[in-house]
Length: 118
Image (cartoon, rainbow, N blue to C red; front, side, top):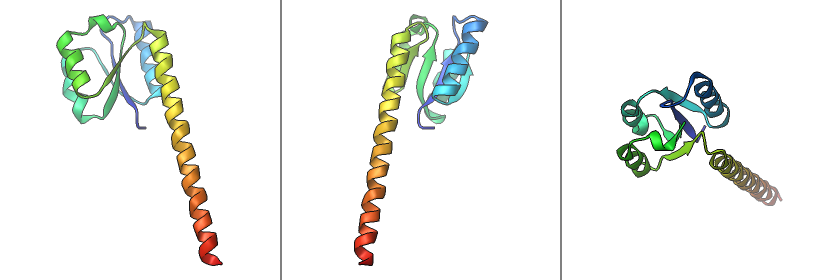
């Protein structure tokens, strides 16, 4: 999967933690669950993390937010359902665009083969 998500569980109770992990697994590909920011930041570069799902964005230290942003990692809040939906919509649009590009390439190759065989 291209969009790999880490889940930072600070502030989430067991029910929300389980829901967050399942959401990440189903929609993005789960890298890992984290209970502290230090380990998340250590893994951010090496594990291909593209997104971090947090229970509450305001629970993150500002230095962690800056570090993740500098790496191009998107931070999504479990409490902000509209941002989660926008991220999923963006992902679906990207998948649709890639599918159309692949179909066009395949069509172009078939046309080239057809012309070559003539």
